[in-house]
Length: 252
Ligand code: BV8
Ligand code: ZN
Image (tube, rainbow, N blue to C red; front, side, top):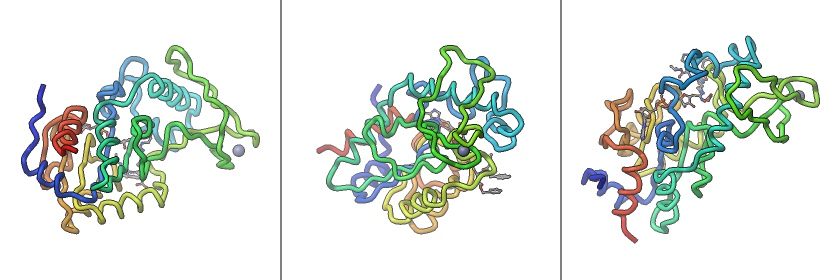
């Protein structure tokens, strides 16, 4: 089905020499990764991701939290980047534009589509470290064939549990990552916000900051979000439909 491009969005994309794309879980939805607020499927439907993705949740029950992350590692390994990820990688290859991606996503689908990601502001599901001495943990992560509710985390040489390299609620973002995302928004002449509900801060403050500096912001999302009143243009479309159509329309 042809995806109609709002003319103003096409014009902004044609003229843009520096594009910053802010992505959220909706970017990976068409790869088969449920979004953060999708009602979780099966085993995990009984748990609130907000409590599992937190320091308190980890300290209260590391085996439960580890089982959840191991299951998510398995799911990311089992899916492929979608046409939206590939479109962004193609756009970045044009020599008339500099394209930066700052993502909230902890998967590696942008990279597997060939993109270089400027900032993973909430860390990476595929980087592990000791929860105490912070030593990176390089050994392969065992992913159960079937989702299990509890799994003993690997243990660091120092004897403490290994944790996923993600940013939990209540934890500071990696300072360099957020600053890089902020700079990329301020230096852009177009910011696209793709597949995020705009609930989680401080990432959700980026579109407002960009607009405050006169940078046009476009939301690409099939649904209304917390950011919809904070953008210049709204394109109610999915990532895997909108982005390939837009990059295609830019021509060679
Ligand atoms: C911080 C990694 C400073 C883990 C994530 C009280 C105490 C402490 C902090 C706070 C507090 N109250 C509020 C805060 C701030 C808090 C926050 O924002 N809370 C929210 C809930 C209000 N933020 C933090 O804690 C951050 N740190 O503030 O540090 C500090 C420190 C101490 C004390 C005070 C302050 C850290 C936040 C990072 C949390 N970690 N992820 C993990 O993933 O397990 S966030 C997690 O949720 C995801 O990574 C993702 O970033 C976020 C989900 O958001 P979205 O990506 O937007 O996904 P969502 O499902 O919501 O929406 C999907 C969208 O896609 C929808 O709009 C949908 O319509 C759309 N969509 C669907 N299909 C498609 C599509 N779009 C396009 N195409 C499609 N096909
Ligand atoms: Zn350690």
